[in-house]
Image (cartoon, rainbow, N blue to C red; front, side):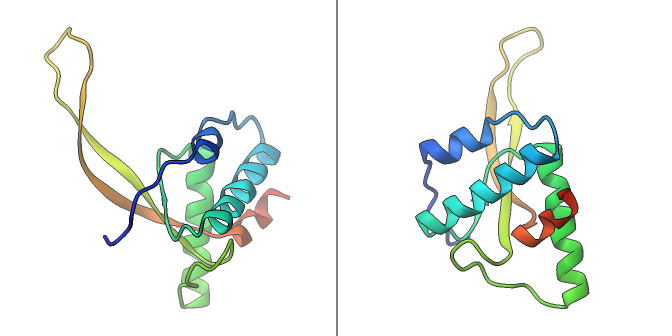
Length: 118
């Protein structure tokens, strides 16, 4: 894939935020893309809550209508997002354990997609 994965405390904290309403989703997306700008990130890897997945779908529709992908730059652009494909490797009745199979592209995130949340 060509990315160097880095875990940050701020990124982990953003991933753990409770998304109770559209205001929370807007705040987390804005903070996440701001964090990408601060760290120079070009992609986002993690576990995505359903309201964030909806923003990825909106970004995908924007890309389709626009006809092109805006390269990530600072906090702007269409950031590729990846989720882990984990395979359960435990026996029935035992403690769940998972084996990471690979990162799967699930869409892109752009701040402009949050216009629907306002």
